[in-house]
Length: 375
Image (cartoon, rainbow, N blue to C red; front, side, top):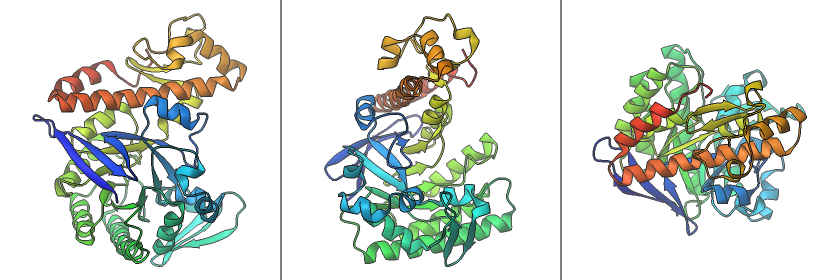
């Protein structure tokens, strides 16, 4: 049974440090969940993830349903065993993929009809079927099917989306209980409502009435101004139950994560660290380094002097630039290892600052050093 415990709250900001438990495993929060969409984090092994400090890996129901199929994963003993991962797992419902591939999907009250991006075959998934599939996949935390929308969005369109999300959440919860999955898995509802305070509040309240093990905040970081995102975070966190985990979906800039923790968020995920790494864009304690750029041709410093990952301990910026420009497979591996390690280190430092009631000071120092500009 999934359990969440708040261990300490920063006295000045309300930022939380907690623990998520399931199957005898523990993940510390604030947590950044590394994305392994298809049951693998691209360019890096589970062993490297563990050594970097990753405690939860996120996979995607939509992709795993299409390939290799939930039945094969079930026969393997569940997602964690299938991918030889020793930590916790979470599966997204596929709502964002529905949003991102709108030209291939049709959304109705009954569910979603879509064409596979692999072979064009036609599929239909109801909220209940999405729960059934995730039950077979066996992730520790599963998400209800929701309708994710973009920005800008009219109030009426956002209202319909939030209403549909709540209806699907109610049906998902009923199916989850009917399958008696609660002994092994936790289920999260997802708050929608675009940038409208009244819709966010109402959606959160109705999800709380249904009852979930945790609550995600979706439909943000889809083009809206940062100020609007943080405003919606504060509004939603104010409504959500204090004693349960809060998960902000798809937000990955380090500075945004820090600001969100300050607003009471516990969990995060984003493909940005690994995707950027494969393109030669590395996060560091002093900002972003696009290591393929010519200015690094003779830069023999480590990527980040403050990082103790294998990449930074062993190789120079000049060497990584050479690997990328030569198309060597070692390049995305070393870059991914660094970015994954960097994000986990930030989460550990942040948690420690919360535990010691110095989060405000740490936050100020961190944000003054880190920017999105290359250093």
